[in-house]
Structure formats: C-alpha cells, structure tokens
Image (cartoon, rainbow, N blue to C red):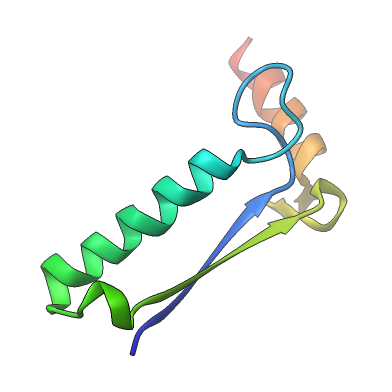
Length: 78
C-alpha cells in the first residue's frame, strides 16, 4: 500500500487565493493515484495521499526563506 506525501506552501495557486483549493487537492490526489496505478500497478483504492500545507515562513531553498529567494531570483532576471 503506497503512501504519498505532497508538501505545498500555504499560499494560493492564483492571484487572490491564500491556499490550495479543495478542487486542486482532489486533482492532486487523483493524479498521483493514477501515476502509481499506471507505473507500479498499484490499485487506486490501496493508495493513500497526504497533502501537507506548510506556512511560507517554514519553507525555503537556496539557503534562504522562500520570499527572500524569490525576490533575489526576480532581481537577477530583471
């Protein structure tokens, strides 16, 4: 029985949103379950998917908090 954990930052996927919507979460769950069915032959009813939303303050990469990293990346591309 596969267990898949998806972590996303707690922010919207479009302007004006501050969280991943229930519809988006349902699509993630279905999509990941279908991948495991198609690649590993795991039945969808045996696949568990957990979505964890992480506050942006607790997320970072490149040695920086996410907002700082994004600002630095944006400044470099300008």
